[in-house]
Each structure stands twice: as structure tokens, then as C-alpha cells.
Image (cartoon, rainbow, N blue to C red; front, side, top):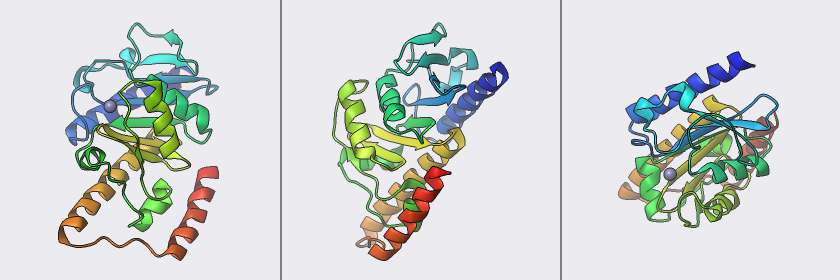
Length: 216
Ligand SMILES: [Zn+2]
């Protein structure tokens, strides 16, 4: 158990480094969490420590009520959002929140990404909505994020950033990369023409596959 927690702490640090190196977030903006053990506990990145200097031992263990179980740092200020998503979605065991550039451009214009790519349906669960604005770290933001997330794996937070969810950290990172890629394609497509949505039948068929993959 301790070995696996240690491995998860190190995986979170590796993902944080990756986010910084790939310009998917900056400094201490963004946060990462994962469920551990009996799944009543989560590991979450600390508040205010830049990813560049974050150490595995800085990552905090909290329970699903947000009580600190282990660690001498404060958990991320977005803890309420992480907890609410875990409470509402049994299928989600890892969450990455980042301040990416292309999804960020959509966040500040309150522009959802319509269902324009097959991979969006298969890996993200459909179009990506924009959660109504609420100040960072608030219960209101947590509620708005969960509402706009629905049964999908990602949501854009208005004037803020993006939240990617998965069944493990690897899955959540892939979701984040696919959202950012879809955001980039959508923005480029709007420059050269009118993006066309996938046919309704394709969306319905691919949603069936997405639901099966969720239950796995
Ligand atoms: Zn943020």
C-alpha cells in the first residue's frame, strides 16, 4: 500500500513536470489528484507550490470530506471541486486541472467545443461544455463544474482553465491532451471556415462505445 502511494506521488510529480515542459500550465496554477487504497482517500497536490519544485512528500492525503490525513502542506485550493467530482462520479479516480492555452482561449470567450471529432466522443464523451463562472476555489465553482461535466470526462471552466478526469492518472492526462488538441483544432478551423459537427448517427454510435469503455 505504502509502495503504491509512493508510486502515485511520483507519478503526480512526473505529470506536473510534463505540464510545465509542454506549456500546459504555469507555476503553481493547476492541480492533480488521484484516489488511493480503499478509494475513500485521495492524494492531491499542495496549494501554492510551483510544479517545478514540488516534491513527492509535498502531496497531501485527504479524505472525501476534505480532512487532511497526512502531510504538512495545505491541499490545493481547488480541493472542493476535486471532492465534488469524486462524489458525483464513481467512475472517476483521477483529476487534472490545468491552465492550458487553447482551452483557455475558449474559456475566456465562453465557447464550448462542439462534437467535431470522432475521438471527442470516444475519449471525452461528447462536446465539451463551459461551466458557468465562479471564483476559484469556491463550492460554487465545484457545483458549476460538476453540472457542466455531466457524464463526460472534461469540462472547461469559464475565464479559468480546463478539468480532465479519468479512471487513473494516465487516462486523465490523455483526456487533458485530447481536450487541448480539440480546442486547438476547433480554433484553427474557425479561422479557415465553419467547423462541421459529426453526423448524429456517428455521435450516437460512438457514445455507446464511450459508455461501454466507462464501465470497464
Ligand atoms: Zn485553476
